[in-house]
Image 1: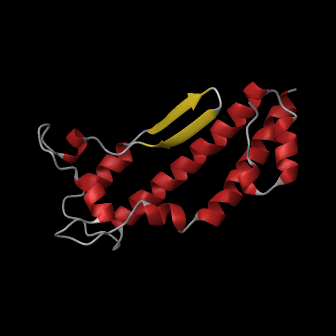
Image 2: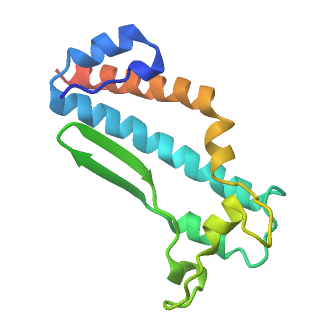
Length: 147
């Protein structure tokens, strides 16, 4: 499986990436995606610190600061993302059925939505695609220099 970056709209970059062995393609793509997830994490924390979301205890912000990048890789699929904070990080008792980070993001019957994840992704989409393409390009150059 070759890494498909056609969503970035840079055919030359796609050709250069395909010229590399699959193992190296994956290494370049994973490295670039990890940087993108880290940037998204910083934006989420920023949204939680600003006026977009009312801060009561700061537990949600602290939980996201400790959140780890998670990855899943199957034969033809690679996914990277950010773990949501654990209940213990937020001070939510183990048996409690409520998990408020999603209620803050999407709202519920007694409170309106205060999105902090979706804007961190949507508001920076074009900028992030450009940075992702740049990171992949740098990764290709780095790998080519090793050869």
